[in-house]
Image 1 (cartoon, helix red, strand yellow):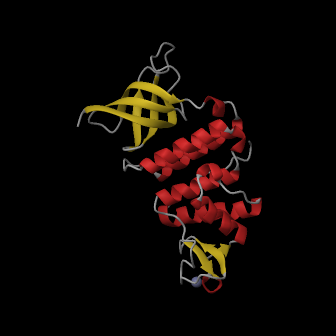
Image 2 (cartoon, rainbow, N blue to C red):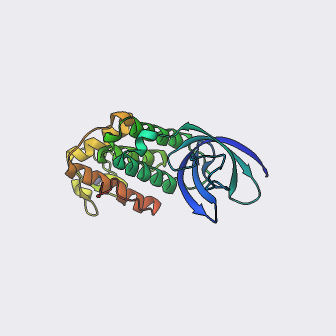
Image 3 (cartoon, rainbow, N blue to C red):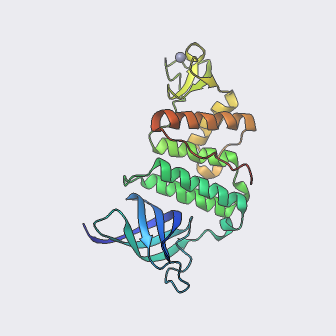
Length: 242
Ligand SMILES: [Zn+2]
């Protein structure tokens, strides 16, 4: 199935390879995550310039041979997100967003909605680097869970269906649980519950706010959901050092 592939892509990761090459992890709308080699890219006069770096949104041309690794033959910048690059917190948030996408959606299965969500997230970080908050990072992760078919059940007890007295969150049950079913759960405060329902229902740019304790519970709910249902652990939503 050799041939030329033209697609938009976001560079998730860029790793040095050999003398002058780079291996890229790309996220594309219709081919999911793609690995590609860019030859000679680290030479000073490379025709790719500096645009094969993480967080670049590109229009890219790839040659597909028989192996899994495609070869980059052309790349144009759609958005380099220059402002994001000048802010340590935004840069860290972008890295965590790309890491989460790369791990949750690591196959060639197409998820154009995830590509659009990632582009939106990078644009928001670029427009307002100071908005690289934990709440924004968690709202993004909740939307990724939804796209992966792993959205926690929030409408009623995930075990028995009870709609009131929802006091805990259970990764095993896959959502909120009531007082009678709370055995394997941890407590979930009303503001953490509200954050999750609002974050899932609102646009990314309009992510709700919540206190640290509530956000801690939300992050734990996302973590146990991923551990139980995707056997996956993500980096913390926000770096401690930035
Ligand atoms: Zn119950």
